[in-house]
Length: 103
Image (cartoon, rainbow, N blue to C red; front, side, top):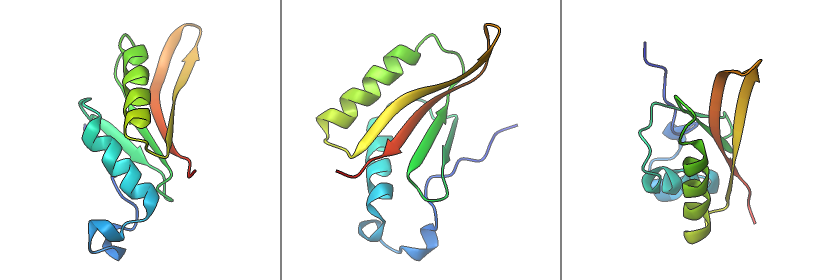
């Protein structure tokens, strides 16, 4: 079963990409530059938080560093962190969380 991937909120309100709110433009730029297979991406209703649900955690450190490098190099108004839900050493969820932070 594949989960729903949401990329924009209220996309029908913005006919052209240049008309998108700044948080959507920043998230779009990040998604184009981040070369991770996108299994599931969930974007919050306001478009300011995007979660990559990743399977397996062996590469999470690399994903975090790659995301930070993309954000810094392209001067995107975003921050990245890991959201890990773990009980007794068993990982139930491991998300790469991108947050829009206007400067």
